[in-house]
Length: 179
Image 1 (tube, rainbow, N blue to C red):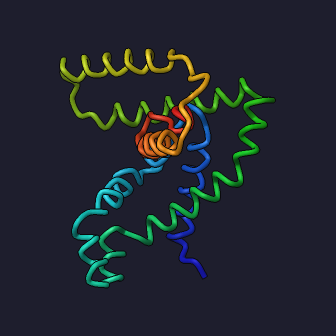
Image 2: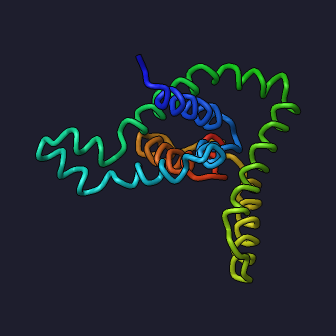
């Protein structure tokens, strides 16, 4: 029997996977809203020399504990399930219920923006300038034209996948949109 805590993390992962297939929303945004973002970033950042040292010495339990493998495993199961189960539904929603679907996306983005704004203790002139620069950069990025004939080869797919994976963990950056 799966512990209740793991079922909750699988559910969180499911929601993150659902977000990852939505252009304009990221799994990182959902993790932020659900309150698991810091734990996720901490776990991912622990794939470091200490982790690989544990693996080299065949200290499997220490390696798993170091990276919070139970948490990450439950999230990955949920993310994979969310992507597989909801990809065709999301395609249908974008084709047939575009306005309502975009309204939900906008609500998710607004909620995550509000949460991030609350996390910033005090606004300074520098932070306001950085926010304005980020808004302008995002506006320019969104306005870019799509590649009509992208380069061929596995190297291009690898680079795109690397960028998309990085984007999927950052709140506010959509890996699906980048792809």
